[in-house]
Length: 110
Image 1 (cartoon, one colour):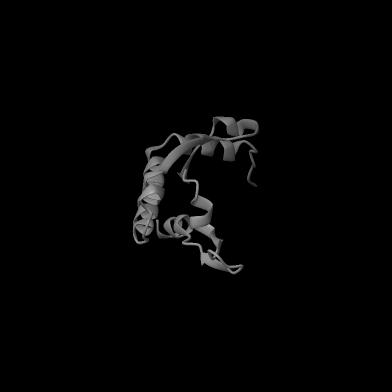
Image 2 (cartoon, rainbow, N blue to C red; image 1 turned 90 degrees about the vertical axis):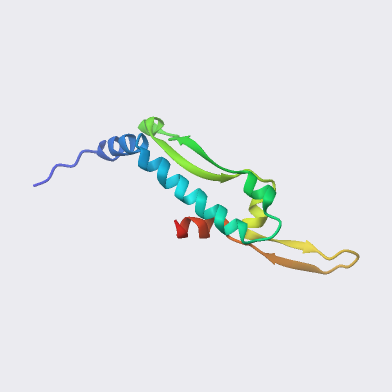
């Protein structure tokens, strides 16, 4: 019969958060996101605001866990990722601009 230790998952997450492999994985995702963003026009400002940040766990013992996040700190990041509606100048019409899904596709590629 096996024993289950409730804190085992937290201990593993604490150890993994301190490893070089976590940094390497985040850099692979960031590189893939930059490659995909470079395929689109007018992404220079967006690409310059892509970065990796360290995030701490928010509750319980998770406060000791360090994770990596690839973030886009651009004002238009949500519109670029998910799409948006654009009003046609001088008309009542609107046009849907589809999202580029740069983050999602970059994560899948990495």
